[in-house]
Image (cartoon, rainbow, N blue to C red; front, side, top):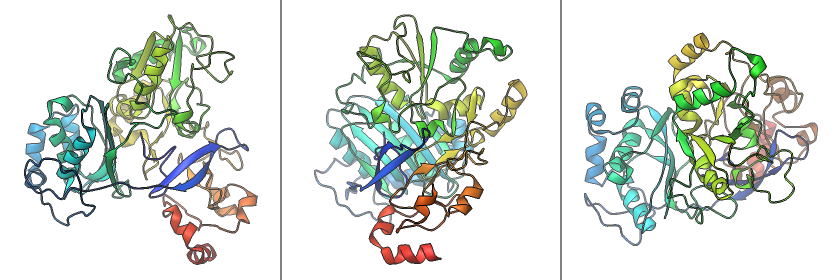
Amino acid sequence: MMRVSSVLLCGTTTLTSTVAPVHPNTLRFTLCPATSTTTHSATTAIAPLPKPFLSSSTPSKPTNRAVQALVSTPRVSLQRHCKFTESEELVHDYDDDDFVVVNFYHFLFFEDPKAEVAKHLSFMEGLDIYGRIYVNEQGINAQYSGPSKDALAYVEWLKEDDRFSDILVQVSPALNGHAFPKLKLRYKPSLVQFEGGDAHLPLLDPLMRATPLEPSKWRKKLEAANPVDDPSKENSSSNYILLDVRNGYEWDIGHFDGAQRPDVDCFRSTSYGLSESEVPASDPLADVDKEKTDILMYCTGGIRCDVYSTILRQRGFQNLYTLEGGIAHYLKREGPVKWTGNLFVFDSRLSLSPSTYKPEALTKAIKTEKNFSHNNAFAKCYVCGSQVCELRHRNCANIDCNLLFLCCTECVTDLRGCCCVNCTTAPRLRPVLRGHQRYKKWHIYRDSDSELLSNSTA
């Protein structure tokens, strides 16, 4: 799904996660440089044929007339022509210059995916879009940011192709400008990072994927299994399992009520229901009836669930359901009913509150959900174990540790942004960051000891 192995943290860094032995709810990262393959087409025709080689330069002004026409199209025109599932909301929520983050994915067969990449790059000329857009033989997976006029122009252009007419597009605000450091639009063998890749999986066969449930039906499923007005009936349905198909650190800041914490630090290591012999106690699919048990799967945007459901289908699980559009789509439609905490996102924003997606839904949820609260008691400071006020991860200031962890404000001050006392005496310390600041690209600290020392002293 991403160009990083586990989570994009700093610029063009590829981060590979390993389990932190000191705490069950955290993870540690090994740092390694990422290689960018972003290219841009020099083609200038209105409907260009893909060129076999694309230049790496980005023109300062649009050279594609089709792009210029879309960028200059009045807002009302976008509303008239868009086929968005939530067109009115997408158009009216944002002004042309408001930065937004757009997410979508779609499974379809591309006979020549590299030619498709070239076609998209040609259209992108002159558009202010940064992000990760991956294409292969089985589809496209996109997460990108940009001014609303540019971000929506790309989606409208895409939807003019009948193959993309029914994709679910999700938009959320990016208040501090771009949420990604650069544009990476390229061919990628796997649309998501999974052990062994996903090229061999039958992603194009909808019958092999789980049955998608729109948010309202998902909510009814959860309410039927765990009635709100009778706490004694918690987990009343023995033939029901709620599966969080994400990472442990994502669960740490928000999850659906009743979902247990994933015992993995990166999606590629997910192994629910895969053991042939002795099944670990942490696997919620251990010893379940594959023909009678309803498996409800959810993730951030939906693609990880779709991919993993094909694996479970091949393993004999019959009643598989996914949350259509993922958590983001649910919060937009239903608000935080049955949801606790914030939503982890794989961009510079890192954590979004439910009110980000639909403030009015939050108000409605408070009125209608009898046991609704803003309780985040499940989220604990990694250092002292106290409840944290802000559901947002930070990285250890020790660059050779770089642990991603939750921390209270007192411990941030006492340990100078580090995760433990030992890290405070490490030779390479980054400056203490407060608030919502993010560290610079990691290689800046790696390659510049003088700047690192001066920043730490300051």
